[in-house]
Length: 146
Image 1 (cartoon, rainbow, N blue to C red):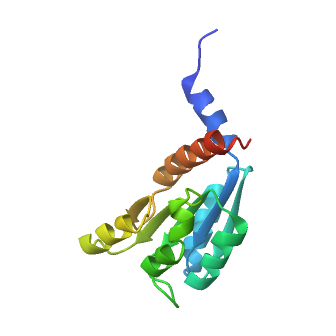
Image 2: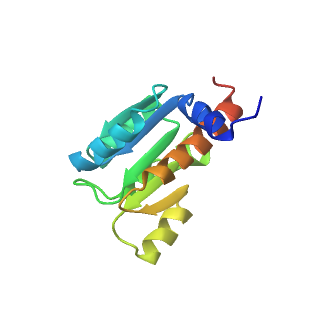
């Protein structure tokens, strides 16, 4: 019987398990990510509307992947990354920043603070799915989680 790579890939993606924290104050952006992740029953989405709430949830929920908007109502994304520096350095958090700005200084600063990646909005779902697959499979391998 021929090997169907497309079906195997879809099965592998649908089998992903983990927790995603999305720190975002725009309800429409949250709905978009919720809709995209609804295809993956093994992925739990936790959301925060402010940077301070995001910091608290990043520490208490121990997410496998964090999406962080750079522009929040209370503190900026760079401040959130700074506050979570210890968790990032210990390999407990993988943060991808999202923004509508393409300021190279912000990108350099975010990466120097330990951000895993930096994406420009609008968020492309295929990019999110690829990143989740990489993060959740890598995280499962490193921690022994299933």
